[in-house]
Length: 283
Ligand SMILES: [Zn+2]
Image (cartoon, rainbow, N blue to C red; front, side):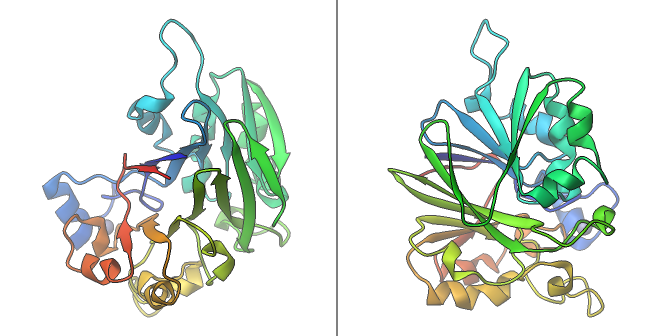
């Protein structure tokens, strides 16, 4: 299995266009850029699936050699898109795929509903290409091209702010990808610990939005925004050795946005690291 990190930042990216905080300023000065969260995964290196479609998707696709069209064709190795949530940083890029002839979209019923009503980009996309909707369900495995078996793990019912009027449901999920070569788990929005995510996994990608619970100040705790802070997770990783752990979806306030941050040493103690845009994992 191959996994290419397309983007590794939370909403807004890093640096964020309207932010002059210490981390964003440092990132600007050093030329550090993290685009918004998403990845491409393939079981056989030929058929690829996107997980999330960030507003930075076009730039991310152009930077990823594995998903270029075969020379002389108008075609794509991208076979579909899976959504972990309906948040804007995960879905705004969907319309950027409208030039394709057909698109398979995998998400929970709640996420599909949001993308057809409160934020109807899936419906709009239907005017340009054939959208095939696949409703994924908690714990029910499904098979994708290239020998990928995927299991959805529903993590929380945290709705996007634009979808506050929609019913409660399965709003945030992780995916567990399995091939004969190993198990890869992608959980960029983790609000509470789920041991089943890490059991038997080779690599687990976790929510790295915030380093600390009070990173945005005492009035805006990470847990109140649906994110388990990295420092809350590290002891749990120590208690579940075995997988390699990687944090992604970093907010621009997180000091780990910057390469060489001293806090990386805390992660290394529990076999954890921070993802970088363009990083390739082979499992
Ligand atoms: Zn900032």
